[in-house]
Amino acid sequence: MDQGGGGSIWIRAAVAVAAGAAIAARAVRRKSVDSSAVFVGVPAMVAHTIAGYRFAGLLLVFFFTSSRVTRVGEARKRVLDPEFKEGGQRNWKQVLSNSGIASILVVLIASVTGGTDRCLDSKESTLVTALIGGVIGHYACCNGDTWSSELGILSKAEPRIITTFKRVWKGTNGGVTIDGLLAAAAAGFSIGLAFVLIGLFTTQCASDVFWSQLLVIPLATAAGLCGSLIDSFLGATVQYSGFCSVRNKVVGVDGPTVTRISGMNILDNNGVNVVSVFLTTVLTAVACTYIF
Image (cartoon, rainbow, N blue to C red; front, side, top):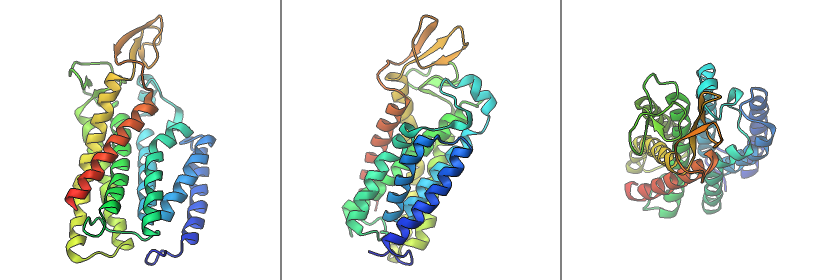
């Protein structure tokens, strides 16, 4: 039940509660999340840590880097982004949509491995390899979508909607820029790099398996980009975008002063995130069973 050098499950749980509470308190003060998000974020942190410090590391890399890029260019985003909130403040729904699937996966991983961190190796266990790959894909997608949205909207280039490549207003769901896509790939890269670096201290692999773990970096980079593209396609088709002549900006709700740009009012932003994360998670999990 012990992870090499990591202590018991109970020690890890205690560490997770203490660290999660401290991080949550700081995040609330900085308006990165509201108080409702704490009741989702802390249990997610505990579940990830019990499964292995590497999974907690991925969660934290996503949280800190996405919070950081959200604060970049806030003055411009206040004008352009229809869902802008000061500090990028997330509520419980947003935290759940960005951690829920991964939390289920890490609980399954912990139940199979007993909390022992494993390498990606289908010869040892195809199930564990797929589950770990799913977690990697999940956070590569979440991070890619956040970086792409938060940095892409600041691009000097005009966004083009992914379905027709026609120019659209900044802030339009499904609008993409080269800068945004590069940001998504970089975000996935950061998740892959974190997974590999933390794994140096938490796993023990045979030499041939050890070197193959480096393939996580390009895989996560691709997952970040792929997840962002899936999110953009869904945003352009099943999420409403319109231009409000009164507010002079893109909005996500129809109204008498709003001219439709794209999309149907089927999913909101959280729904689009969940679907894109789920699809990227599945694709990455399957890919890992073939690669490793």
